[in-house]
Image (cartoon, protein in one colour):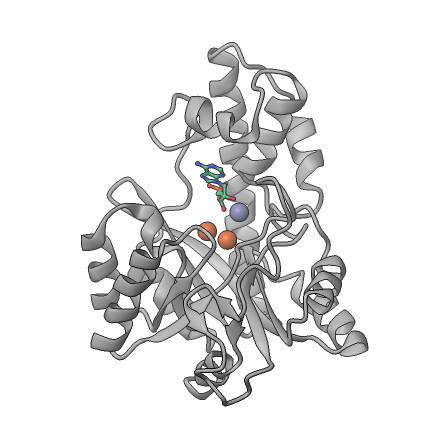
Amino acid sequence: MKFLGFNIGEKPHLENAFCDFHVHTTFSDGLLTPEQVTEIAKEKGLAALGIADHDAVGGIEPAIKKGKQIGVEILPAVELSCIVGDCDIHILGYYVDYKNKKLIAILEDIQSKRMERAKKMVEKLADQGAEVELARVLELAGNGTVGRPHIAQALLEQGHISSYDEAFWKYIGYHCPAYVPKEKLTPRQAIEMIRQFHGIPILAHPMSYNNRAIVNFIIDEGIAGLEIWRPDHSENDMKYLNALVTNNHLLATGGTDCHGGRKGKILIGEIKVPYEYVTALKNAR
Ligand code: AMP
Ligand code: ZN
Ligand code: FE
Ligand code: FE
């Protein structure tokens, strides 16, 4: 059976155990709860699942609880944003001490700055004639980290756009009139923050930046690994990333980055990374 990037069976070690390293929950901009994503992972035959919410770790414990009941191992993670030039870079931190009070306080501070940002984006949208209520955006975010997907959802509800993606190319994508950047962490700061809390920093969606120099720069800044296997990566992307991982002695992960169907369908199960990559991550701690 061929999965993205693998001929399963070439890898006899733990050949029946697979992981999706990267999903979102209602604790950030995912549409499914931690319990729901864990149940879906089980249904799809995954042994392990990475809970990687934007600037939030609250989804990890409920997922672990559910995972213990039904037999899914949860990889605790967080997805931090940082900036290179005007490019928004995401760095995943696996096995961070998600119960650490200092980490939680830092994330809460980032979350409150995100609320300010949401307010600014709503104001800019009004200037563009696309009015949405800030209260509605925050309501859509619930107790989770507020982000552009919630704004896109509010725009859709108000009929200002006719598809989720339109929000990004018309209003809130980079270089669009209502886009407001986030927190100005540098990649080095994000990497150091993850390491400070005993996590392993992995570059998320390396091809999305459309800039190979940035990927090399982040490798030089001390990233521990790259997210190679994703539904939005071509065979060539994966070959290129695989070569980078090999040449720089990095770790490799892969995942669907599922947002619970926000982008059309529930992706969990579409990427199945052999469990040995989880073992490699654990050994790197
Ligand atoms: P934020 O952290 O608020 O900047 O929002 C980032 C999230 O918005 C990403 O994790 C994606 O889920 C989503 N997103 C960003 N750009 C796009 C895009 N062009 N099309 C669809 N979703 C996007
Ligand atoms: Zn997201
Ligand atoms: Fe991301
Ligand atoms: Fe993500």
